Image (cartoon, rainbow, N blue to C red):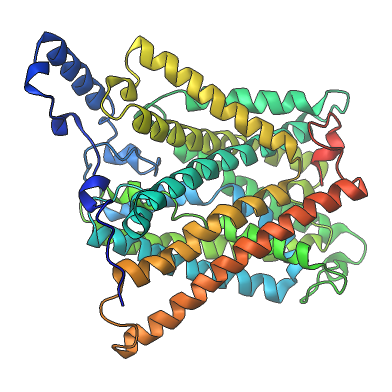
Length: 490
């Protein structure tokens, strides 16, 4: 039986707010009110300058903007830019824990599941056009409670992702500069400052072109890493045949390590989180299917090749992020090339959550558009707080794998797995689950996906916490807010 949409949270409540939708009481229609309307209209105009060319490289777009007409090709480019980034650097180490066979199967399998669940996410938007972001969709299932719960998850997810970029930036600076006498915290502060500076523009129009640099940098960095590790392996004693890689998991692998590797792969496919806000910009929303297939297949190809090739060239000792496994000089060059993707992608996450908070706190004020003195003061302070929180998280958890695993377990498990499965049962399914062969097959598939999401949530969180505790216990990290550079190269 289908679950009815809660009356307290309807499609109409999910619709975005704009200056044309504001209905002031008659007594407020004075000069002050007209001035306020003019200020809001000016702000709205400022936030509607993002053309289809630059929209393609920003992916994230605030839900309160009017739709822009973009075609499916540029949507594909936009999705690719935001999706293929940080997570790809953890895939080779996941292969080392899972083995070549399981690594390939998990990478390809999760990739196709992510494509399907993204399809379901899009179907909710098609049936409920006023849904603007993920929290709106969950609100249709669970009412106000679901909306607020998912809003918190959305904000925390983006902050944690920003934290992972702070951590990666710290690792990059340590390797590039190679001066162990400099306290590692300094590099974390520098990374946070760069992320803060790049997150300050309140509209994507003002820096969306950087997305092309963002995408090119990660692709070139991965290519350099593959070539460098391949050359190093071929010149080592015994050549490529002597590389200690295995088709199967190491016999002494622990549950926590294996599951943590799986959650890192899950993190790499977290491209459905902001899908609703992007679909709101499409001229023909039904074309989103072409976009997610193009993105999903490309991700599967890049992640599988990156994981398998680097693992085959380096073996069981491959590090995470994978650039650390390249020879020192090459690694420094690759990290230098990867700096744009580290800081541009991280800053966009901060900008998105900043815009979301401004929209929630000031839903009917010109302050949300950040084009007045007061608006700028609030915006500068908000972005500073978000970056500070991300920096604290990065320094408190100074190891790449555990942070990605924690993010995947707590949030990506829902956005990519169990929420879409629940969407199908409550918002998409027509008739009873056994009404037709198609319904039976999809019901079984979505129950499996729901189960996968819950397993990732529980098992992944346990594995991440266990990994953190074990790392501190064995002394493999220097502790939170460590000054030693060696604490960041595990």
